[in-house]
Length: 236
Length: 241
Image (tube, rainbow over all chains, first blue to last red; front, top):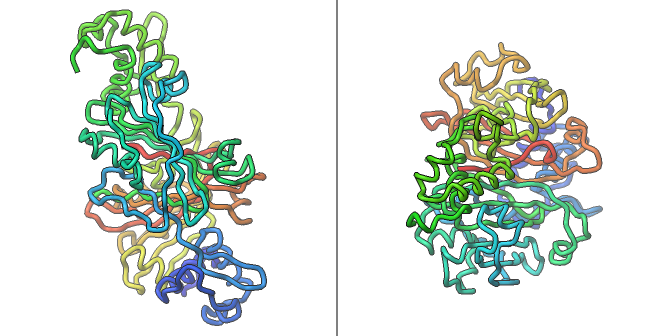
């Protein structure tokens, strides 16, 4: 390695990451000790510890006191390209539970957010996303009844509801607008996610339109920060 | 959709679509009430209601005696490497204010050889030299993001001679005919460690956006790999198509 002015632990963390991947470490596997890793990479233990900390931050590994370092469970990938040629891969560890499927009329807030007249009839779907037994996301969807009058609960099991709506309505997507922000759990979210009120969470909000500019779906998902990664694929 | 079914709400949506698709550009004057009412076969009162709503929602702005204009965005796209310098970057980070002046501080640069991880990411052989550039990006002197960028030196042989506190990396890459214009990105939130928290001058809130970007040039060659950490209170992560 030629001498460089880049911070060593950042670069080292990447090599360590590569090693773990190519040596096929699986979630839950224990990493070699700091001492062995330091020898492998020919660096001080303090340096390897910093690199390990980098990987903890990235969520690649976790550290357990007095036990060592372990491979973390990979995050659930959420694609933001709803209409990519390749459909979303269903994660086998993730299950969904419909919390609510009801009919509502657009109130002031929804009419403002969705830019529809007040009292427009909507389907409102609230769905919990579970990993093993832990609720990791609360998803809320609003769809115009006019766009999809008959909605069956069985239709709501697919991983990506927005994607489902688009295929069910046959409208095709012309555009979408999504935003990912940091929010803090309100009472309801903290209850559903079993986290203290005020805990940091990710909010993934979005709108999907068809070719006529007709809004198809509006969603607001609240997600546990440590369990998700968003992916935007390159356009080939 | 037949003309007589158009409500103020629908007209509103149509106008928004036109604004979002760029048919109506920021700063552009929108058609008069009269011409909108003729075009869509609605009363002038309906047009007025739709426009009132859009003014309220800050899509449009009325200027006395001059007309109604498409409002310039409340956000300024930041000149953040990939996050902005190309229109195709879609996980765009946007600053929530007007008139942000962007500057950079170079934390370190260097040539990396024999690095499996970066070589794999950039689709290079492990012997190919890679140039690394670590920067802090500021908006009005406040730190907004840390960017760790890696590019293959085979496309940018003289990259070491440039000072990327003064020159935009993307301007330089464009001058070498390898501007990234297509991206594969991942975004997550993570808890910042001490170093990043220090650079970004974080207070109690340690959660930051972490975006990984692979940039492809017009010929589909990988020309950039970047990891960025940014403040969620200063930068918004958006995906718009």
